[in-house]
Length: 370
Image (cartoon, rainbow, N blue to C red; front, side):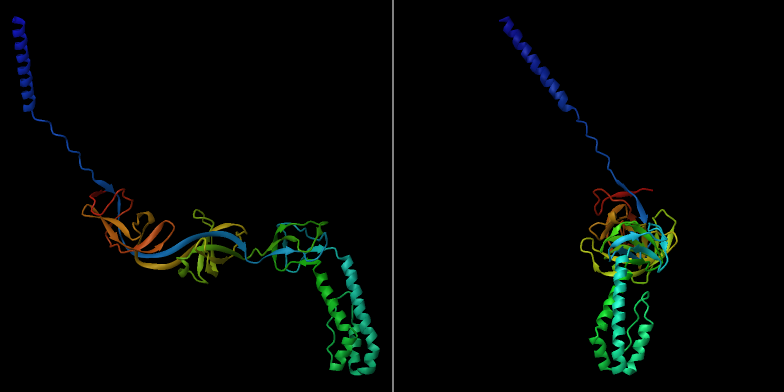
């Protein structure tokens, strides 16, 4: 009985203690959570000052000689040695012998053809004296001046239809033109320089068998060059034939030349959407194959400002800072270059954001980096 009373009292005491502890905890104030500090995005800006901007484009290309020919053989034979070696780097004056191909056999055939023409005219002289005495002297003088070692001179002019028919019947005209044709072919055994220039490639050597259609080398005039550049179609309206252009080896180089646009292709390349422009220039330090850059100036854009292309939003908006907040300002892009864009629509004094703002929006509170 006594143990039951003790157990009951112990339970009552525990309940009272629990109730007291719970009341004490409930009466205490809960600590308030600390509010996070407000973060304001920092941005860098530039004060806008509109001005007149000269548009320009930098395009590169490979320099090529304006006058250049690929040398090909039109006859067959063994190449012979000449006074000047047929090697790259050798220069030739106009008309100077470059290549000589052995022509013994063809020369003999040509002489035989000349002899046939001479015999035909000689055999016709007696009949000419009887039937056309007024024409005899000119044909007699022609045959007396005939030289087997010189090119065949033009035949005398006939004075009448009868004389012409007589000469035709003697097969003189046919033989004459056949001889002249052989002379033209014979001249191709000796290849002469078409202009003052330099040999840049030689593919044959003395003793080589040359065949018709075989390439022999490349020959250029090193005094005048052309630079072909590809200009974007958006810049096409700004260039014209006769426009002066500054050409350099690279942006870091101080070697420059002044060229002139001499041709502009009328077709836009479908793959690159560019137009070919050809710049003529000359200079002692220029060599074929050089990689050069051309600075082409175009139209002057008035009252405009130039910014990086990555700042442009939706192709027609820029961020400016006003009263501590971002403002999206509409602008008009007037010219795109490789990395920048020229725009109109900004006001002088506007604080233009110069770096993209991650998550930026109109009305966003920002502070300017001093």
